[in-house]
Image 1 (cartoon, rainbow, N blue to C red):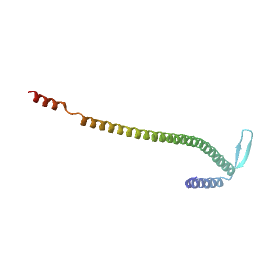
Image 2: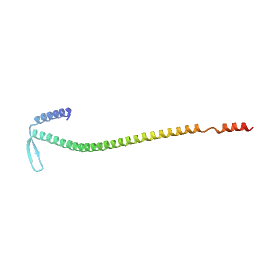
Image 3: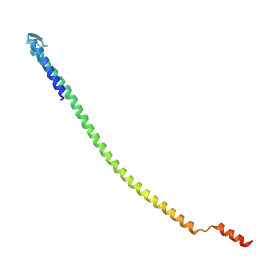
Image 4: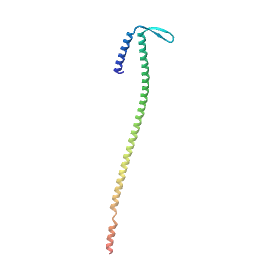
Amino acid sequence: MSQFSIFAGLVFSVIIAVFALANSQPVLINYLFGKAEVSAIIVILCSAVCGAFVIFLFNLVRQVKASFQLRSLRNDLRIMEERVQELEKERDFFQVQAGQFQQAFSEASDAVEFSGQNRSRNIEPKENTKVEERKDHT
């Protein structure tokens, strides 16, 4: 409980006690099954206690609902954390695969470049030789 709630409860209790002491004359209470004459102090204090009990019951119901909701949310959180771990493992796996594919692609493009350079060195331009042959024939 917060300090404000405790303070408000104490102030309210003092007000009820002063009100009850100021009204100490006997009153007639009519029950469904009979009548009784009781001091007003007792009627006021019993009414305050019954009101406090009803408030307690409402708060108890609210706390039980909150407890069930908290349990459900904790379960959802656990499930989500497990899913996050699964997705992180999957991401790591795909990152490793992407790295392997990138390395293989890099090696393949290097091999293609290297073989292309070898071909250009071995191939002699045919136009130049034809030009020289034409000069010889003319």
